[in-house]
Image 1 (tube, rainbow, N blue to C red):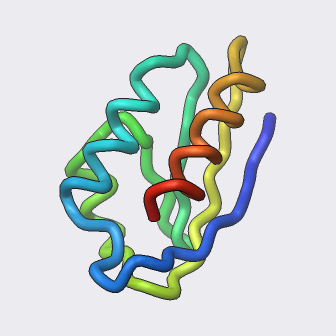
Image 2 (tube, one colour):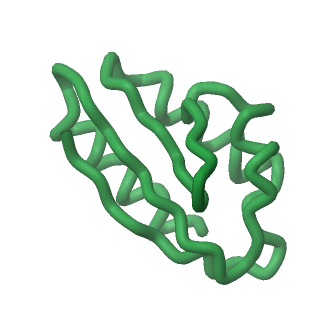
Length: 85
């Protein structure tokens, strides 16, 4: 299992377009990928679940990756977050 923390920097938070990018990337891997905000944890493959987190600028997310291709999936997810959000 691998995980990383990320603080959202974009002023609009995690809106539908950004959430869609996360879903697209997460669906490329067999590993389970979850996004956590506080006590809430959702599957990164589900757009509406990500949207229910209500992520705002300054929120700290924890992304966890677990499965057969977790090394590559975690690397790519981390790259996506640090490049886009």
